Image 1 (cartoon, rainbow, N blue to C red):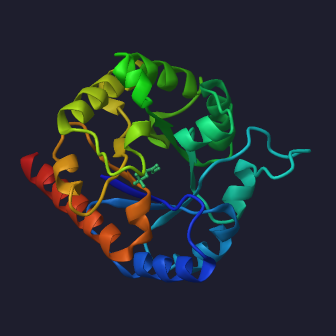
Image 2 (cartoon, rainbow, N blue to C red; image 1 turned 60 degrees about the vertical axis):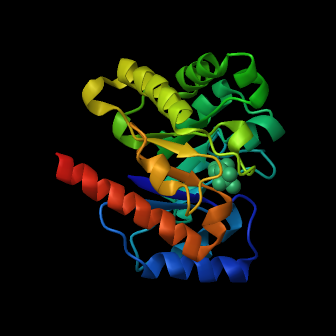
Length: 252
Ligand code: 13P
């Protein structure tokens, strides 16, 4: 199980330091935690996380390693600032920055080339769901966003229905199950049944609904936005994941 915090363009630096110290001083067995921090915070957060087991990631990277790309950051810069992973293709970047799945694949290849792990986000809009296209949209996004040469061990996928992000309208367990099964099929086709990378759910995950989401088949964690800015709420989500992971181990 993976529980990832996507702080997006939040919070102020002082509050970020407090949150990161809370992350570093807590421990949750059987799960991996990741913090996707704003780029200027990577170095200060890497210092605050240095004595814990939380991995640090960037929220985006450029596909080139250097060059005349004002305002962008490269995968090697993320790595040099303490990141070991990067979030790619978030719907907010797809919508606000015109990021296509082809661009995501190039960024993913660059990140893998620099030794970073990648978490690729996919998810349909409300209109696409209402049109009955949710599954096809997500299949197409995922197939195109995955670069050609990529080991399964370097990847995770976050299914984030756009309409569930920041709205409180969490997807229903049955809908999550269907979409995770569809994503798992694409990944199985690509990597084989024994090497399907973790698939996380994201979109209005909070301390109250986390256990129910983690009980859905093929859900291997959560990508958390708003609730990751509240140390207590995020810790409760991590506890729920830890309990789910423990029961999974017991079942085996
Ligand atoms: P919320 O948890 O605020 O809905 O955000 C989800 C998200 O976009 C995480 O990447």
